[in-house]
Amino acid sequence: MTKIQVAIGDDHIYAVEGLRKIISEAKDMECVGSTTELLELPGLVKKNLPDVLVLDIDWLGDKLAGIHILPDIRKVHPAIKVVMITVYHELLELAREEGAFA
Image 1 (spheres, rainbow, N blue to C red):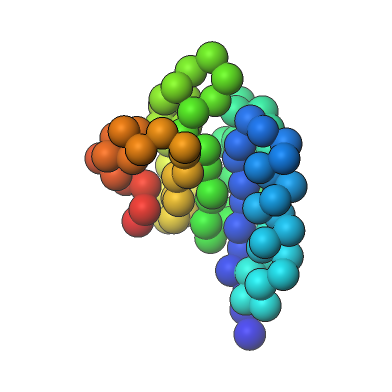
Image 2: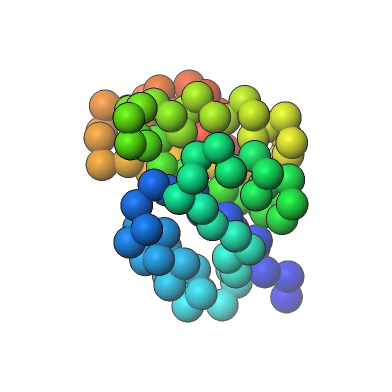
């Protein structure tokens, strides 16, 4: 069975660690990379070519940073599926409009 390759981008290390733990316990997924640095995301995606990117919308200093970086991520890996996460419900519709939750 081929595992789903997942990458994680979140500015909170505890969120990254928690997501890595959840993914590591899943039989059909594996984490191929993670970062807490927004500008590292396109390079991480290009290097690892994950099937799915779990991406936080709100990064320190920019409430829409996850949405803003999506075009750069899609340039390096157009077929990637993106699942955006946030604690701010009002940001979810913006994420959908940008192609997250594909």
